[in-house]
Length: 254
Ligand SMILES: Nc1ncnc2c1ncn2[C@@H]1O[C@H](COP(=O)(O)OP(=O)(O)OP(=O)(O)O)[C@@H](O)[C@H]1O
Ligand SMILES: [Mg+2]
Image 1 (cartoon, rainbow, N blue to C red):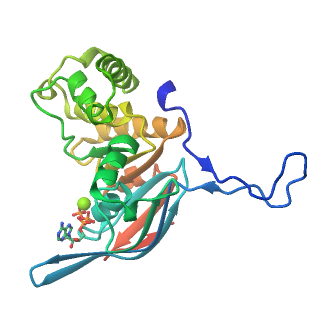
Image 2 (cartoon, rainbow, N blue to C red):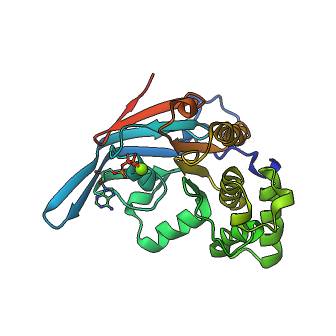
């Protein structure tokens, strides 16, 4: 896990402290991984509107493992899309590591998604005709990483999820849990700032689920910020922080 063992906290320079003087201001606050302010998301289709997110104010410091729970249609996936620069809010601001993604155009959003965000989904989203190694390398293609480095980074990412001996297997030759490990390796290979997971264990049996949650926990302990949507309370209990989202409103869960 050496590749992912860094935290991604950045700090704001302290404008007051000068060399050789005692600092007058308190230590600089680290910039959070996410800061959402007044985020609204309204989907409009023909004459129907859906208010998917309502007045969401949320700060997620770097290095947290956050679980998001809530009833179906409550807005969990919509929130992940805002965090992951997949879409822009109708109103409000989304800051990712100090950069306001809610103001960016499509090209800049695509660049941030490719470079900074690791995505993991319930259905793995692997390409069935490519091997595990090739699937992981695919994640690096938009970053302009040279072929040799793509290969070595993909091999290291597969090793970090315990699949070094399955690199040449097609997805159809892997178990569900192994396919999800390949998907996690694909996300990790780009060395993302944050890992966003939408129901990462939704398709897995209990033992495999615990296995995958254990893997995510290990990545979190090594410094990665992880935000995962889950319907499974046993998974949510393993997180450091739990959020609930119902009818578009986010609350902290005990
Ligand atoms: N692209 C879209 N266009 C129109 N409405 C949408 C769109 N995406 C989501 N919605 C609506 O927004 C609301 C929130 O959807 P979202 O997918 O975020 O819920 P969810 O909490 O992830 O639900 P689930 O647990 O079923 O995955 C729902 O009412 C949904 O129908
Ligand atoms: Mg969803």
